[in-house]
Image 1 (cartoon, helix red, strand yellow):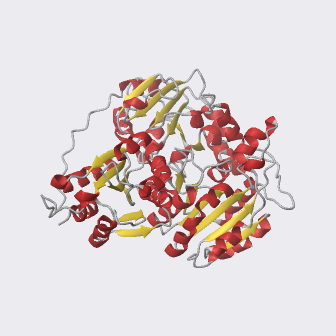
Image 2: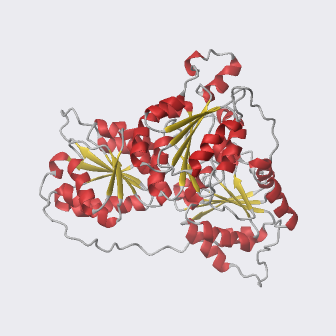
Image 3: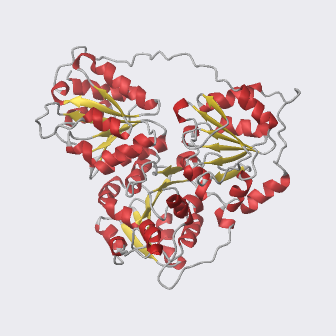
Length: 545
């Protein structure tokens, strides 16, 4: 067997079931080896889209995503999506053919490129092809984005130690018992505890819920973990700039805040203003290097979130002296306040819709009513991004994909395609701005080809809204960031999608009809949103620059 064939078979045996990419000469054989083994190949229109698809697939499925690209320009075309994945710690393997001759037109410093964006780099050797491919997959499964270098001359070589399966058992180091006594003491002393779960806690919903019930904590999340506690009566939804007034009030009166797998960055804490200075702050993370990176913390606990939560829970003894008081502020009155005021839908606002545009809050609330409850919401970056994040509910943590680690506009549409491949049983909603949509519209070709249930909602303000509202108040000219009104629904129809323009709630009738149909052709909603003022969450963000 050639090395490329060994790599493809080993990755499949380790669990790779879907690979996204654009095939060229350098990745032809390894991609075909994956397909021959039983994996599904999804052909993207552009490597940048393929990278985001693999990212969205991995986040939504909870498994390792695979990206296959050509050497040189195939890798660099994928670089922005690769960087988003690496900064999000998405489990992903990038099959990166490598021209190793420095004078080759295809040569790039692949290890240096991977290091520059925070990805791991592994390289396949002919003498250890199965071992190297397996090690890359296992590193990704542990939560890393891995660039797997496949030197062209090595790919075509005969594997000197051919693999014949099955996958060898992987020996893992024994788990280290987390030191939780200081955290347990803090919980015993607290009367108003709040848990804030972040990206590192996405798989720990059940143990965190049990622990919160035992100690009377309220539950909140960063945007990366939205949906983790969906349906829980003590769930405050998002912390930070997207927090409801009630959530901000309650977190602001906490005497203990435990950050589970969250670094409490400026987005999650409103530049530190959300958490009261008198609160004890605890950070739980598997990576000690994450402790205190964004703000001082009083206590740290090193360990996987699930393991730490379970260890603390096991040490609770309700009958012992000094046991945690699970009553605290979990009163019937507070439960009623959360039911009545815990969602943005319950917060009054002045509808700023006019004869030609719709208020994005009104649009989002109307869509939330129309869409099936079982959904996946994928949010691109931009001035609009809070509206779908705050007004569209999701059924669980797998139902929300937030492409904001690199804060790049234009990744949401392709990420939504990956999410739709991962969960074809759900309606996938891609929420994008007009700028991000135009950047990524090429992948509508892929959306039509896949015939998956996909709704694309464009919050169209005919501008790069963040720049308009950041620079406009100071009198700067805005011609470079504002554009003529464009019929983006017609653009979508040109790609083979259904398209509708929305300027008022009454224009959503075709969306209702599409939802009632087969949903095999993507629907693109060009929502002309009013943009008289900027979003408050970006105003906070700009203060942090």
